[in-house]
Length: 215
Ligand code: NI
Image: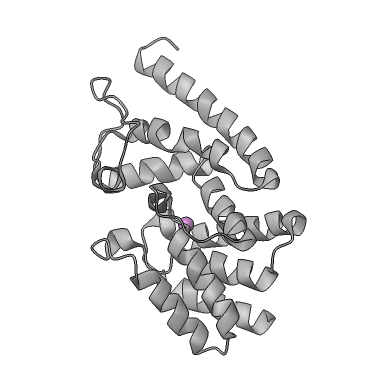
């Protein structure tokens, strides 16, 4: 298993070299470590958790014209050529297909403890100090304004409008990041999310005070 994990790490690092920093190797490494940490308490299948965490962003659909099949297919091909058992492959592929926030919009049909764990680890990386950094980085990549008081957050996104939005970066906190703590699947992740959530709230308070020259 260690050998397989090492090979997977090398494969993912290579594949993601030059990836957008929100979904680069360092994101994968953080999610992998956090998934293992959560799994120590929640006790899912460690091989499935590890492979799913390492392979979950192997091809971000945002960069493949929205094609959500590229990632699962690549992960499957990699695992097949490295002798992973068909049962494990099926579980990992299902996790990769269902982990994305976009799939929140009424499309989740698959459930497993390992999906819960890896999804929590991925969501935790979207909040707190790292979440803030990733959000502004992505907004910069899209050249979005930081904030525009005239453009209110859209709390009724559909999968399509969520993908297509070009709203100011601050809106993303209200449309997604501040909602994540209540979406954690496991008690272990919920506890970690609580602290990161408080940090983001403090950050936003400071942000708006500075924006209005009040601090
Ligand atoms: Ni991810």
